Image 1 (cartoon, helix red, strand yellow):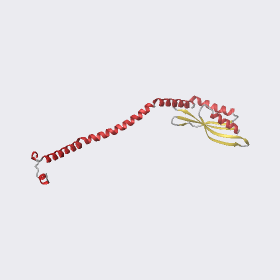
Image 2 (cartoon, rainbow, N blue to C red):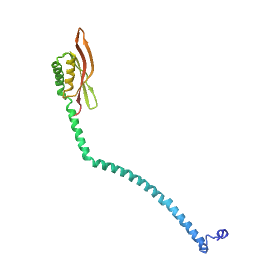
Image 3 (cartoon, rainbow, N blue to C red):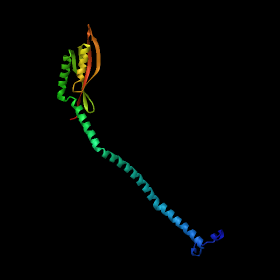
Image 4 (cartoon, rainbow, N blue to C red):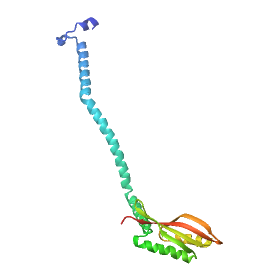
Length: 193
Protein backbone atom coordinates (compact mmCIF):
# COMPACT_ATOMS: atom_id res chain seq x y z
CA UNK A 1 0.00 0.00 0.00
CA UNK A 2 1.47 3.30 -1.04
CA UNK A 3 0.66 6.91 -0.30
CA UNK A 4 -1.65 7.34 -3.29
CA UNK A 5 -3.79 4.33 -2.26
CA UNK A 6 -3.96 5.78 1.25
CA UNK A 7 -5.35 9.06 -0.14
CA UNK A 8 -7.95 7.21 -2.18
CA UNK A 9 -9.49 5.41 0.81
CA UNK A 10 -13.19 6.18 1.22
CA UNK A 11 -14.55 6.42 4.75
CA UNK A 12 -18.03 5.53 3.51
CA UNK A 13 -16.77 2.18 2.16
CA UNK A 14 -14.50 0.86 4.91
CA UNK A 15 -15.41 -2.72 3.99
CA UNK A 16 -13.68 -2.26 0.64
CA UNK A 17 -10.38 -1.17 2.15
CA UNK A 18 -7.34 -3.39 1.90
CA UNK A 19 -6.76 -5.63 4.99
CA UNK A 20 -3.65 -3.70 6.13
CA UNK A 21 -5.57 -0.39 6.14
CA UNK A 22 -8.41 -2.00 8.11
CA UNK A 23 -5.98 -3.31 10.74
CA UNK A 24 -4.21 0.08 11.08
CA UNK A 25 -7.54 1.89 11.25
CA UNK A 26 -8.77 -0.60 13.91
CA UNK A 27 -5.65 0.04 16.05
CA UNK A 28 -6.13 3.82 15.73
CA UNK A 29 -9.80 3.58 16.75
CA UNK A 30 -8.95 1.27 19.67
CA UNK A 31 -6.18 3.69 20.76
CA UNK A 32 -8.60 6.62 20.65
CA UNK A 33 -11.16 4.64 22.66
CA UNK A 34 -8.55 3.69 25.29
CA UNK A 35 -7.26 7.31 25.46
CA UNK A 36 -10.83 8.61 25.79
CA UNK A 37 -11.64 6.08 28.51
CA UNK A 38 -8.52 7.07 30.43
CA UNK A 39 -9.16 10.79 30.06
CA UNK A 40 -12.89 10.76 30.84
CA UNK A 41 -13.15 7.83 33.29
CA UNK A 42 -9.86 6.60 34.71
CA UNK A 43 -8.05 9.93 35.20
CA UNK A 44 -10.45 11.10 37.95
CA UNK A 45 -10.41 7.63 39.47
CA UNK A 46 -6.58 7.65 39.47
CA UNK A 47 -6.54 11.04 41.24
CA UNK A 48 -9.01 9.72 43.81
CA UNK A 49 -6.88 6.60 44.28
CA UNK A 50 -3.75 8.74 44.84
CA UNK A 51 -5.63 10.87 47.36
CA UNK A 52 -6.86 7.78 49.20
CA UNK A 53 -3.35 6.31 49.17
CA UNK A 54 -1.95 9.45 50.83
CA UNK A 55 -4.76 9.33 53.37
CA UNK A 56 -3.97 5.66 54.04
CA UNK A 57 -0.30 6.51 54.66
CA UNK A 58 -1.29 9.28 57.13
CA UNK A 59 -3.79 7.06 58.92
CA UNK A 60 -1.26 4.24 59.10
CA UNK A 61 1.29 6.62 60.68
CA UNK A 62 -1.34 7.80 63.18
CA UNK A 63 -2.27 4.21 63.95
CA UNK A 64 1.36 3.22 64.51
CA UNK A 65 1.84 6.22 66.82
CA UNK A 66 -1.28 5.39 68.80
CA UNK A 67 -0.35 1.71 68.88
CA UNK A 68 3.03 2.70 70.34
CA UNK A 69 1.28 4.80 72.98
CA UNK A 70 -1.15 2.00 73.72
CA UNK A 71 1.74 -0.43 74.07
CA UNK A 72 3.29 1.88 76.66
CA UNK A 73 0.00 2.75 78.36
CA UNK A 74 0.86 0.86 81.54
CA UNK A 75 4.22 2.64 81.84
CA UNK A 76 2.55 6.00 81.18
CA UNK A 77 -0.10 5.24 83.80
CA UNK A 78 2.61 4.45 86.35
CA UNK A 79 4.36 7.69 85.43
CA UNK A 80 1.12 9.67 85.86
CA UNK A 81 0.54 8.03 89.24
CA UNK A 82 4.07 8.94 90.34
CA UNK A 83 3.57 12.53 89.16
CA UNK A 84 0.26 12.70 91.05
CA UNK A 85 2.00 11.52 94.22
CA UNK A 86 4.83 14.03 93.75
CA UNK A 87 2.32 16.82 93.09
CA UNK A 88 0.34 15.85 96.18
CA UNK A 89 3.55 15.87 98.22
CA UNK A 90 4.43 19.33 96.92
CA UNK A 91 0.90 20.58 97.61
CA UNK A 92 1.25 19.21 101.14
CA UNK A 93 4.28 21.45 101.58
CA UNK A 94 2.17 24.53 100.88
CA UNK A 95 0.42 25.85 103.95
CA UNK A 96 -3.35 25.88 103.98
CA UNK A 97 -5.33 28.94 105.01
CA UNK A 98 -5.49 27.92 108.68
CA UNK A 99 -1.76 27.07 108.80
CA UNK A 100 -0.54 30.57 107.82
CA UNK A 101 -0.60 31.91 111.39
CA UNK A 102 1.19 28.75 112.55
CA UNK A 103 3.91 29.41 109.98
CA UNK A 104 4.45 32.86 111.48
CA UNK A 105 4.74 31.23 114.91
CA UNK A 106 7.28 28.75 113.51
CA UNK A 107 9.40 31.56 112.06
CA UNK A 108 9.30 33.41 115.39
CA UNK A 109 10.14 30.25 117.33
CA UNK A 110 13.08 29.44 115.04
CA UNK A 111 14.42 32.97 115.41
CA UNK A 112 14.13 33.02 119.20
CA UNK A 113 15.58 29.50 119.46
CA UNK A 114 18.64 30.69 117.53
CA UNK A 115 19.09 33.75 119.74
CA UNK A 116 17.80 36.37 117.32
CA UNK A 117 15.97 39.54 118.29
CA UNK A 118 12.98 40.40 116.12
CA UNK A 119 12.61 44.09 115.33
CA UNK A 120 9.80 43.78 112.82
CA UNK A 121 7.46 41.14 111.32
CA UNK A 122 5.03 42.40 108.67
CA UNK A 123 2.67 40.60 106.34
CA UNK A 124 3.07 42.04 102.86
CA UNK A 125 0.32 42.17 100.23
CA UNK A 126 -0.66 38.76 98.77
CA UNK A 127 0.27 38.17 95.13
CA UNK A 128 -2.13 35.98 93.14
CA UNK A 129 -0.49 33.66 90.62
CA UNK A 130 -1.96 31.11 88.20
CA UNK A 131 -2.60 28.32 90.68
CA UNK A 132 -1.20 29.70 93.92
CA UNK A 133 -1.10 32.82 96.06
CA UNK A 134 2.26 34.16 97.21
CA UNK A 135 2.30 35.23 100.86
CA UNK A 136 5.34 37.42 101.62
CA UNK A 137 6.41 38.13 105.21
CA UNK A 138 8.90 40.94 105.82
CA UNK A 139 11.30 40.25 108.71
CA UNK A 140 13.90 42.44 110.40
CA UNK A 141 16.08 40.49 112.86
CA UNK A 142 19.31 41.06 114.77
CA UNK A 143 21.93 38.54 115.81
CA UNK A 144 25.41 37.23 115.23
CA UNK A 145 26.56 35.79 111.92
CA UNK A 146 26.27 32.22 113.24
CA UNK A 147 22.78 32.83 114.68
CA UNK A 148 21.57 34.24 111.35
CA UNK A 149 23.09 31.27 109.52
CA UNK A 150 21.34 28.77 111.81
CA UNK A 151 18.07 30.69 111.40
CA UNK A 152 18.26 30.47 107.61
CA UNK A 153 19.26 26.80 107.80
CA UNK A 154 16.34 25.95 110.11
CA UNK A 155 13.89 27.72 107.80
CA UNK A 156 15.20 25.65 104.90
CA UNK A 157 14.55 22.49 106.94
CA UNK A 158 10.86 23.34 107.49
CA UNK A 159 8.38 20.85 106.03
CA UNK A 160 6.65 23.78 104.29
CA UNK A 161 7.95 25.67 101.28
CA UNK A 162 9.45 28.95 102.48
CA UNK A 163 11.74 30.92 100.17
CA UNK A 164 13.91 33.70 101.52
CA UNK A 165 14.53 36.67 99.25
CA UNK A 166 15.58 40.32 99.29
CA UNK A 167 18.21 39.57 101.93
CA UNK A 168 20.11 42.62 103.21
CA UNK A 169 22.80 42.37 105.87
CA UNK A 170 24.27 45.34 107.72
CA UNK A 171 26.13 45.96 110.95
CA UNK A 172 24.22 47.35 113.90
CA UNK A 173 25.23 50.90 114.76
CA UNK A 174 27.45 50.89 117.82
CA UNK A 175 27.94 47.09 117.99
CA UNK A 176 30.26 45.47 115.43
CA UNK A 177 29.39 41.89 116.49
CA UNK A 178 25.66 42.21 115.80
CA UNK A 179 24.28 41.99 112.26
CA UNK A 180 20.88 43.29 111.14
CA UNK A 181 19.19 41.17 108.50
CA UNK A 182 16.24 42.40 106.49
CA UNK A 183 14.65 39.50 104.61
CA UNK A 184 11.38 38.64 102.92
CA UNK A 185 10.09 35.11 103.48
CA UNK A 186 7.81 33.93 100.69
CA UNK A 187 5.41 31.05 101.14
CA UNK A 188 2.58 29.95 98.88
CA UNK A 189 -1.01 28.82 99.27
CA UNK A 190 -2.65 26.61 96.64
CA UNK A 191 -5.69 28.27 95.05
CA UNK A 192 -7.38 24.98 94.14
CA UNK A 193 -9.29 22.60 96.32
